[in-house]
Length: 197
Image 1 (tube, rainbow, N blue to C red):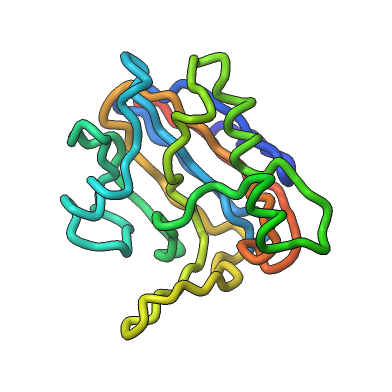
Image 2 (image 1 turned 45 degrees about the horizontal axis):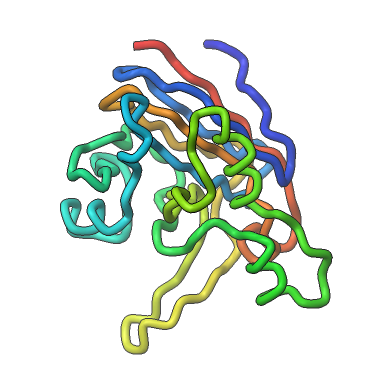
């Protein structure tokens, strides 16, 4: 198996994932979130949609056997392995505005939003086209009575991973998340590898 590619702490990347290939995202040190976006390679205006996914999969708790759908109601990725089982698809990528709102005493960082915009610009994806990300390993608890959201440290342990099979040719954006609460207060790398069909 190929050696994983490293995304340094608080950074991001973008790459092509062909239909049939498998993307494995690994948390090498534990308790680190990775924001993931997917766009159709044929037309980046077709993009990953949390609303369509919740609708068609009939759950907000996505894991093995669930598919991630596009805004055009087409399946983009299928989760084929998952050693954690807890991810978030509710919250938007962290941004400079996020840091000013939630962490006013901390230095402002461009966050996952800025990292994704930078990484995806060569694929003609603009900032306004960035949707809600599939937040791998992110631990968001929803109060069943009030609907209130609480971001807790990830439950992922060192070496935990999730694998997706591409159902169409895709442009993928991937980060090592930059937000304090999402990662238990520290920032670590994310590893990933693409496995051919």
